[in-house]
Amino acid sequence: MAVTHETAVRNTIADAVVDLIDTGTASPNLGYIEFQTSGDVEVATLTFANPAFGAAASGTATANAITSDTNATGGTVAKFAVYDSDGTKLFGGSVTATSASPQGDITLSSVSVGASDTVSMSSLTYSAPS
Image (cartoon, rainbow, N blue to C red; front, side, top):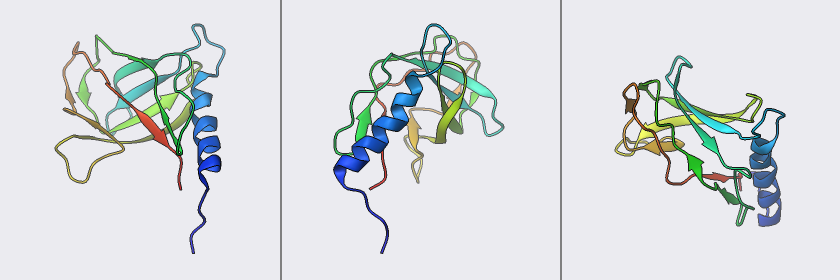
């Protein structure tokens, strides 16, 4: 039998993870999400609000407003990484286009980003394991 977490524990886990985005000493104290190529090259960087996420409910935290990157470096997005304001990597995962199967951890309307394109996110959630 697998280990499972009750909702209160899942909320605590989710809050602990996303609250790390708000740490760091760089000013302004804003964490960010970086979309990267498969070779770890930055394609676009979007900045979180502070706080980055609201309180978790049912084990899931929802991001507050995320600032678009209006001048992307460009490239083909394959993955993402989330950092605090000091550039300390906190977690990451896969990225696919919404039409892909299977879906990545984050889906974008297109993973092909041109130089100086705008990259935006309408919503983002973080879910703790059950």
